Length: 242
Image (tube, rainbow, N blue to C red; front, side):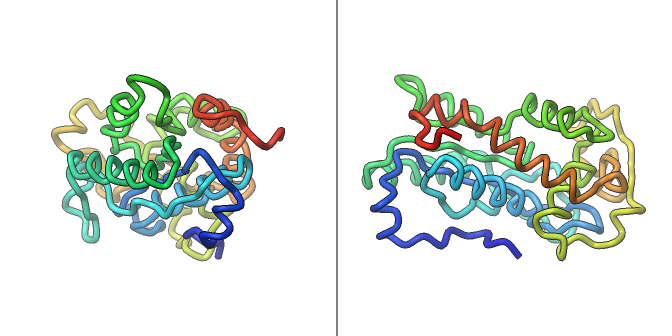
C-alpha cells in the first residue's frame, strides 16, 4: 500500500525550503459496496503525494472529513459544515504562515466540497495565496486524454469508472470485486441539493465502475500531475523543470 501520510521529517522540510504547501482534502462517505468510505481522501492523498514529489512542495496530511451532506442516510458517512471546513483551512493557512509558508495548493477529491472555491477566492483577493485543483474541466480533460469510456464528470459522478480506476491502480487491495456489477445511470438529477444521492441511486453509485482498469487509473494520476503545473506556477515558480 502506498503511504497516505507524509513521512518527511522537520529536517527534510528545512532542507526542502518549500514556499508552497499541498493540502489534500477528501471526505468520509459512502462509495457503494465496492469502494471504502475514505475513497475521496485516498484519492486526494495519492494525487497530492505525486504533485508534491514532482514540484518539490511541502505535503500536508489530509482533511479526512468534509462536506458530504448529500450522502446522508448511508451508514458510515460523516460530514462537517462548510463553515467548519472554512475555519479549519483558515487555521492551517495561519499556522503555515507562522512557519514562513504563505501559499497553499488545495488538492480536492470530493465534488461536494463547494466551499473550497470561496475559500480560495477570499484568500487570494490581494495576491494568489491559494489555488484549487483539480476542477471540473481538469477531470473532464483527463478522462478524454486517457480514453475513459465516460468522459463527462456529470455522468461518471460517484464511485464510477474514474474513482474505481484510480484505486485499482494505487490501492487495489481496497477495491471489492463487486465493482464489476454495480453500474447505475442517473444522468438527470435536477434536485440533488434537496434530495441528496438517495433521490437518484439506491446503491450509492452513479456511473459505471465495471469499465474501470488499473491502467486507466495510472494514466489519470500521471496526467493530473502534469495538469497541476499551472496551478503550482500561479503560486510560485516551479523548481522542477519537468
